[in-house]
Amino acid sequence: MPLLFAQGLRKSFGETRAVDGVDFFVESEELVSLVGSNGAGKTTLVNLLSGLLVPDAGSIAFQDIDITAVPVRDRIRAGIARSFQLVNLFDQLSALDNVRLAIFSRDGTTRQLLRLAERNRPARNEAMEILRDFGLEDKWDTPAAGLAQGERKLLDVALAYALRPKLILLDEPTSGVGTREKGTIMDAVAQLVRERFLAAVIVEHDMDVVFAYSHRIVMMHQGKVLAEGTPEQIRADERVAAALLGKA
Amino acid sequence: MSGVQHSPDAAMPLDTARGAHGVQPALWYTAALALLALLLPFLEGVPVIGWLASPFQRIQLTYGLVFSIAALAFNLLLGYTGLLSFGHAAFFGGAAYAAGLLVKYLHVYSMEGFLLAGLTSALVLAAVFGSVCVRYTRIFFSILTLALSQVLWALALKFFWITNGTDGLSIPTPTLLGGLVGTAGDKVRFLSFTYYYYVLFIFFICVAVMGVIAASPFGKALQAIRDNEVRAQFVGIGVRRYRWYAFVISGAFTGVAGALFAPLNGLTTPDILHWTFSGKIVFMTVLGGFKSFIGPILGGVAYNYLETYVIKTTEYWQMLLGIILVALVLVMPQGIVGVFAWGSRRERRNR
Image (cartoon, rainbow over all chains, first blue to last red; front, side):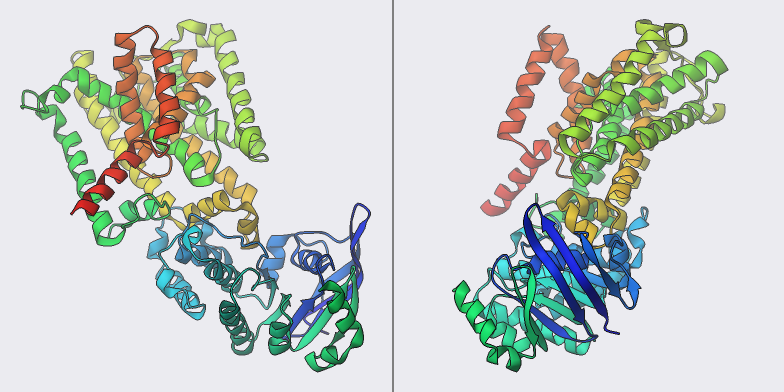
């Protein structure tokens, strides 16, 4: 069985069928890209998998356990973490505290009232290490609101990564950042997938990025899966080219 | 670096120069103020600051410290968790009434008894109110806290055979530490010396404990919820449960302040259960600066002086306080602390 296995997922908003009967799986240590034009249902699919939304129909299993209706906190505990398309950070907290909070929460130490956060050296060291992995160690003291857009994107991914997930869902981790920073973000993600044995699902618009980093690509169109395969297969697929051109 | 002094404010982008430059002077000011407060009763007649040491002024400061504890507790909710309560009078007044009822029905005159009763009543009230209120945020949360606290006010007013209605319950001079500390002598001497130290001691404890809470992993979780509820959920924090914890802790410390207030004032009337008293706690916190840990401390003390002297000068004092509040929000939204931070930044720039 794959790490994550979803069958027949449906989700409608009023008349709009955002996700319309999607089967989807992720193997361990696999980097899967979700592509498709705006409104194809990529973000909705990620929202269903991460627990932000509950599907109208269909089922999701993670490590052979049904999690279709399991609340967010339990999914995180099971090992599913996500980042957000529109950066979602703790703006007044420093970069260090942002990451550290994820660590505290993961370890269940947010219940500690009468111990200074600063005294938890292992948590601090681990947070600094994660900041280093994402090239943010110089900015550890800066409030998240004071970071540049690319740095905020990196911190958003770092927060999800700090939860030590088995599967990380990244919703457009490179949108709104410069070309060079895209490489930085994707290199960091690809390296984590390779070295820390993560699986990742990445929603991405930039096809150069997608072809360069993905193991497998899933193309969505109007709520359905249009095509699926390795970068080579997708590159050769005429329907994909047509859909992408249609978008442009 | 002292964690207590540094970390609560580390989250607040008030003073950008942290590390050695930002922390050391703040630490010195705090230590100097604490020392001054400790020595105050012995400074009568000393030039420059002698006037602050008169019994009248010391009692004023005691009031200020009590309000500071309440404002600090209130700010755990407003500044740290992002919830604006308009019902904290319930915990303050409830605790004071608990002390009054202890005297009336059980003839207990022990200050520790008052504190225990006040703390317990505030804990119970906050647990119940909180379980209703934290289901909502923003204006809905504020209105609910206001409504629930008004219920308590109405009870205190209407059940006059228990609470003496608007006459209130009188609180005689209590025994301190089970009678270990002499409370004989006149009331002014008691309040301005013995009780002054008693309140100061509890004030220090409350500041230290709340300071640690604010800088603990729990405190960070509250700040995370304040900043971004959805993301807090997606790092695995039970948002509503943590809001409830914060509400209960905030209420409990407010209750401690209320219990300390009872013998100081000598009388508990329904005023301190009314929503306008909740408004005063909000005012103190905003006055001092709700974006920093120490702001509410300054706010509580400053508010008490403001009220004392403004009432003396004009019968339109409430209007004057209103004008000050408007000016505060428009001109110095970061409160007294913001003015200090601005001053020290200027000083550094000029150096």
